[in-house]
Length: 205
Image (cartoon, rainbow, N blue to C red):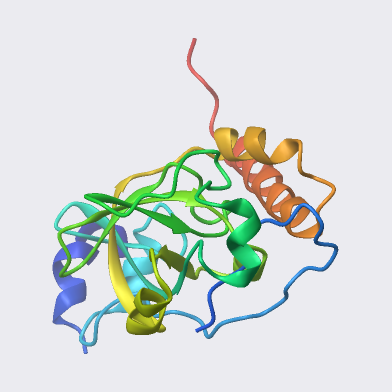
């Protein structure tokens, strides 16, 4: 019953920058962040969750939203110098009208585009970090240490503009599977795709 009228009725109810993939890293960060809220105060979060196609997201005005924790990182940090301005996807880090961001690719697959409520910029998931694996935290790229400090750690509402590709994420990470944090993301993606294939209805020819 919730699915039929939830979107109309729900609203009436009551840093440390993450390290990017390291070719010499043998450890996996198990840092866990507090669970994020599904909606703003005054919304029926359970109702919103049941109408969302992705856990942890909710629909609003026809778009997909989520509330996530964000931190910041930069290529000028000591543990990122060896990567230069390259992302895990192999592109240049961006900080213009489209800005780079890092996340667990089994949560936010590579290529995901989103906007932070209240900001005019578009962010693109093109990087990942070992400290982000197993969390829904997004690391926002900043070109300087001053930018990292100014951003700090904050909870933000994001609107998904385009969902990325789990297949492309898996393709990029396949050759790096010797690293524990990469294997963890690959395992999570494979598990999601297995669940999706076993729960999908019969295909029409």
